[in-house]
Image (cartoon, rainbow, N blue to C red):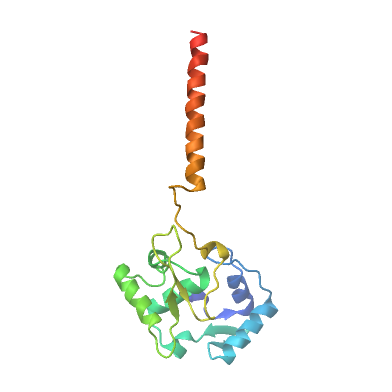
Length: 193
């Protein structure tokens, strides 16, 4: 969608695209054999096609997501970013899909996400639980099953309890020590006038 002039892609171009180091999460390093196996698997599911173009010396490949699922341009842009970048907040999605599809506002993007989440027979995206410390919940695609998040993004934490806790006792001890050091420093300064 972002570079239609290079589409459909040869195996070499597709391998380079898969291994691109920017705009990817995670960054990968696939060889041509792995990419071809992935293409065969996608073809068997009706999600990719081998293309022979007149005058072309190499076999090329194209996706068939739109033919299979009848996605709108906005839905396809959202799925593209989720597939390339992993779970994203609506704000991140709106910014990162802009070259492929410009959403009017966050409400339009939210409507698209809700449509994808409500697809029948199976949803293709899901809103994830909000990570502690983040303002917004993120969305993930379900095209390869339930998302597996790194442990750093799934940790649950209990709010810090100050009153009567070891942390509160430590803070009080440090405050007392600081006060004692200030008094000692003032006496030291007084000796040298």
